Each structure stands twice: as C-alpha cells, then as structure tokens.
Image (tube, rainbow, N blue to C red; front, side, top):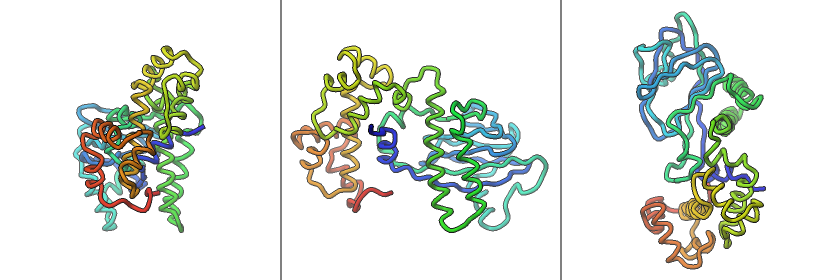
Length: 310
C-alpha cells in the first residue's frame, strides 16, 4: 500500500534543522519572531513557560512544542520574564559567550525548525493548528517520541563524521512522530492524517496517490473502500474534510506543481501525467487551486532543477 503521508512530506520537501541542545539557567527568556519556518522546542530536562499570542503553556520534561506556521512565541523560566531574541541567543553561542550559562534551576532545550514548501495547500498542513503541544504523559504509543529525542541529543553531543546529516534526519523523524501523536490524540479523530487510521479511507487515499495520472472515479474509490458510493462519499468527507473527488483534484494539482518546478515538461505532458486529457482543462484546474496559470507558476519558481531535492 502507498504511504500517503510520506508522499506529502516528500512533496513539500521537509528539511529539519536543529540549532542547539543547551541548558538554560534561571533567570532566562528567549523569543522567536514570526517567520517562514515551523519552529520546534523539545524540553529534555526541567520545565519552562511558553507564551504565544496571549496563550500560556507550561512545558515539562519530555514535552514538545511545534509552531507549524512559524507563529511568534517566547520561552522563559517564569511568566513575565524579559526575553532576548532567538537570533541574539544564537549569536552568543557562535561567539563562544552563551547567554543563560549560569544561574539556579536549569532547563535543557533542543530547538530547531522545519523548512518546507509553503505554497502547497494540502490538508495535512492546512489542518494543523498554530501551536501543537505534545505532553510527555499523553504520548499514546510507547516510544513514539521519547525514543527519538535521546538519539538526537546524543548525536549532537558526539559531533562525529556525518553527525549533522544524522541530526537532520532524526529531526524529520521527530516531525512525523509529532504529527502521528497529535492526530491520534484528537478527540474528534478528523483530518487528513487521522483519516489514515481508517482502513477504508486509507485504501481510497492510497489509490488516489498511486493512480492520480489515470482515470479515477468515485465508484472505483467506493469499491476499494468496500462501501456503497453514497456512504463512502459522506464518510470520506467527514474524516478528511474534502469530498473524494475534491481530494483527487487537490493531489493532482500538488503533483503538477512539483513537475512544473523540477521537470522540463511541456504543459500537455504535465496535464497527461496528472490525469487530464487536455492542457486547457488542466490549466483551468491549476488556476483554481493556485490562483495563477501553470506557466506563471513555473516562471515564478525559476528554472526547473534536475530533480527533486532530497
């Protein structure tokens, strides 16, 4: 069976970057301005307060905070503490004069970001909240997150050959685990990632991903799911948030956008590869999704690369 979540993550080109694993000694406070990257903070030891747009969270050892759309936020040892900018803290590390290096109660943090294409309007990304707080005692499957963090911290401490690549890959694994735990813990169990736990819907989504270049019908998807046409259509929309054919069109447009960015294909070739009989009908569908024509999209994306970035 196809792995739709992996398909999405490959398409949006997730790349993990870990800034540091450091002890922050009280008193301390650090803030991150809004930006294009998804920021994350894992509390390895101790506790801290996280504040974002008037909301306040208490983080304890084992907790992880993810800001999927790069919302501005602050971390500190207690509410109301003055903060320094994250870039200023990174500068102090680069200069060999780290801030918050002595004091009283220590909190160890692992901080970094995930960069990804933000022009993809896929429900796996759109359905994420501004803040995800994974609590250590709420982790639903043994080892889901707590097996990744220690490996990441140890690899950062070793700084051996290839350590940067290992840390980046572990960070990306951490993101997948965060998403799994978040969606598994939602009471309503709705959304794209949560829907992949439903075998019937998962089979239909896998069929869409595997066959988006062929003719895919609602009747075929219902047969794959083992449901009647009407019951399947309602069940799919209730879980995913889109009707089956809506999702098919969205996935086709996601795939087409990647081809336009990375492959030297004529427009009618792209259209054919994503299941359209003509460049005209494909162009109309693409413009509805991205608000610009495929030609404009390709021009804005720059010259096509030799292939997708790993």
